[in-house]
Length: 241
Image (cartoon, rainbow, N blue to C red):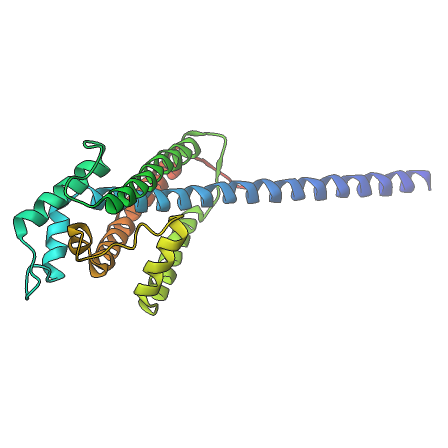
C-alpha cells in the first residue's frame, strides 16, 4: 500500500516537472521566434531606409522623374540647367557636403533644415537597425527552429498590404498628413511663384519617388532576407525538440 502511494507520488511529481519543462520550452521557442521576427522587421526597415537614402542622394533620378512630371514642358516650363543645379544643391545639402541650399527663399531654406534633421534621423536609425540584425545573426545561442524562414515573409505581406492601401488612398491627403506629423511648423507650405525648389519638386515628383524607393526597398529586403536565412541555416543550431 505504502509502495503504491510512493509510486503515485513520484509519478505526479514527474508529471509536474515534465509539464514545467514543456512550458519553459514553449516560452523559449516563443522568445526565439519573436527575436527572429524582430530581426526580419529590422532588415525590412533597414532596406527601406537604405532605399530612401539612395534615392534622396541621386540627382540623376531627380531629373528623370522631373521629366516624367513634365516640368520642362508647357507655358511654365522650367530651365533644365537651373533645375539640375538645384537638384545637385539639394543632394549636396542632404549628404552633408553643403550647409545650405543657395537660390531658395529664407522660408524654403528653413524647411530644408527640418528635412535634413529627419534625413539624419533616418540614417542614424538605419545604423541601429542593421546593428540589431547583425547581433541577432552573430549570437550563437539562438536556436534555429524549423520553418523560421517563413517569418521573413511577414514584412513582405505587410508591405503588400501597405501598397494596396496606398493604391486606394488619396496621395494628396497622405502627403499633407505626413507633413503635418513630421513637421512642427508650416514652413513646408511654399509659394511656387517664389521658390524654384517647390516647382522642381511638385507633389507628383514625391509620388513617383515614393514608388521607386518602395520598390527598391522590397528588392533589397529580399536579398538581405536570403542572406540572413542562409546564415541561420549554416551556423544556427537546429532545434530538434
